[in-house]
Length: 403
Ligand SMILES: NC(=O)c1ccc[n+]([C@@H]2O[C@H](COP(=O)([O-])OP(=O)(O)OC[C@H]3O[C@@H](n4cnc5c(N)ncnc54)[C@H](O)[C@@H]3O)[C@@H](O)[C@H]2O)c1
Image 1 (tube, protein in one colour):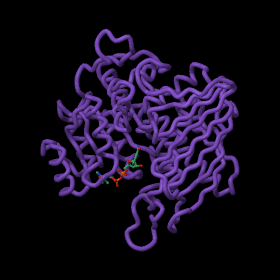
Image 2 (tube, rainbow, N blue to C red):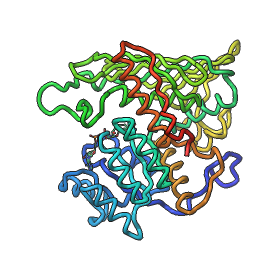
Image 3 (cartoon, rainbow, N blue to C red):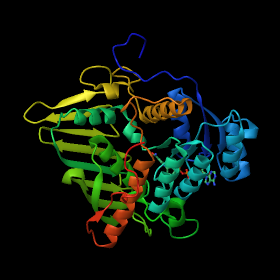
Image 4 (cartoon, rainbow, N blue to C red):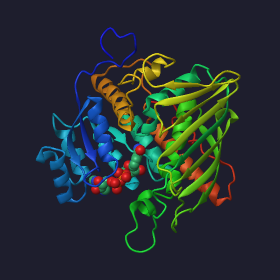
C-alpha cells in the first residue's frame, strides 16, 4: 500500500535475499511455484540451484533459470559447502525434492548455517522430524515449511476473526481436501511414481500429501492443535499399496471435535480444500477454489460474505498481505508470495541480529512440520488398529513453542 496509507504493511526490505533451490528443475511440479512466489514477493533473487541430481538436467534447468554456471550443482551437499564458503553465498535454500530427501538436504544446509524453506511433509518419519527440530534449535536458522494455503489473505482473515472472538468459543472444526488426479495412479507394473514408493514418499500417500495441508490449515486458522486422531484409509482409485483416500475424526486442544476427509481419487474434483469452523456465536467457511471470500454466519443474523480487499470487514492481520484492490482477483501465487515475504523478513532480521515484534509473522515453522509428521504416523497407527483413537501430539522432548 502506498505511503500515507491508513492500512498496515510489513517493514520494507533492506536488501534482496539470495535464494538457492534443491529440486524444482525441468518437469518438476512445485519448484516453479516456489520460484514464482519468491519473485512476486520482490524480496528474493534466485542465484543457485541443484535443480536435479542428474548433471545434464541440472545444467539445462540452471540455464533456463538464468543461473551463473558456477552456481549450478547436481550434488546438494557440494552446493551447501560451496555456497556457505562464498561471500555472496545463498541466504536460504528451498527444498522441493521428493519427501525422503527433505531431512538430509535440510540437515546439510542447516549445518552450513543456511536458512531453510522446506516443502511438506517435513520428513518421512518422526525421528527425522525431531532431529530437524533439534538441529534448528542448535543452529538458530530460520526454518519455514511451505503450507502455502495458510498464507492466503482470506485464511489470515479467518484466523484473525476467530482470534477476535467473532464465532465465540469454537465447538466444531471440519476440513476436507478432495482431488481427482491420482484416480488412475497405480504402483503395479514398471516404474512406480515416487509418490507411491514408500522408500521415497514415506509410509503414507494421501494422508501425508494433502492430509498434512488440511490438518495444518485447520490448526492454523483456529489456533488449536490436533491432539488425537482416528483414521480409516481406503483405496478408491486404481490399485495401490498406499491409501488414496482417508477419513478421520479429530480431537483438537480443549476437546474440540472435528473431521478431516481427504481423497486424491475423487472424480470431478481438482483442489477442493474447504474449512468450516463453528463456534458458540457463529461460523466461518473458506474454500481454496474460491479463495477471495470468507462466509461468516453469525448466529441469528444475516450471513456476510467478506471479500478480500481494503476495509469492509477485513482485519489488519490480513490487510497487510493485500496486493490488489477488491474486485481484482488474487490467487495461489499471491499466497506463496505472502509466505516468501514473511520468511524473508524473518531471515533478514536474523542475519541483521534484529528482533521483530511478537505476532508480526505467522509462517509455518519446523515445529508445524513436525506436528504434521506426528499426525501422519498417528493416522497410520489408528488405521492399523481399525480406527482407534491415537495421540498425535509431539513427544514432550520436542519444544512446542513457535520459534
Ligand atoms: N506445498 C505444496 O502445496 C506442495 C505441492 C506439491 C508438492 N509439494 C511437495 O514438494 C515436493 C516435491 O514435489 P513435486 O511434485 O514438485 O515433485 P516432482 O517429482 O515434480 O519434482 C521433484 C524434483 O526434485 C528433483 N530431485 C530429486 N532428487 C534430487 C536430488 N538428489 N538433488 C536435486 N534434485 C533432486 C527432481 O529432479 C525434480 O526436479 C514433495 O515433497 C511434495 O510433497 C508441495
